[in-house]
Amino acid sequence: MTQVARMRDGSLVYANTIPINEWEILKKSADSDGFIMPCCDASAILKTSINGAQFFAHTAGECSSAPETKWHKTGKATVMAALASLGVESCDEVKGRRMQALSATPY
Image (cartoon, rainbow, N blue to C red; front, top):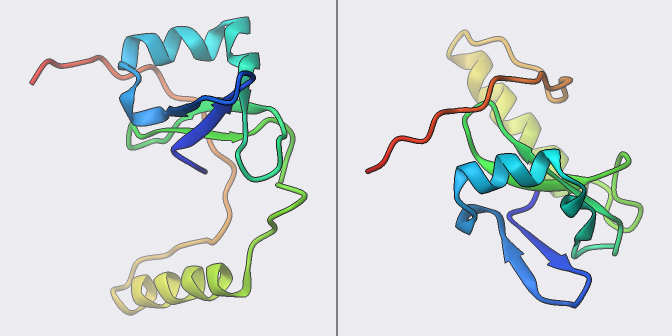
């Protein structure tokens, strides 16, 4: 999950700068084929988290050049331990689910 991707021309695109309505249109269109992950040059897809955060992800599985580091795995374990101490069940990896698009509310 990353907030930045590259376009085929090399320019950077930040997920949080794209208005929600444009993001949803891009997610459904062929134009999203132009995004590239900055870590490994793999093609990227646009996603929206269950909390409404826009981000880029690898089109096919995990990044071949940047697998989870021991620090990332330790961080996940630390968060899960903290949640457990609060009585909250957690899992370090879960399959996402498709949600209805969030409606944009002007500030």
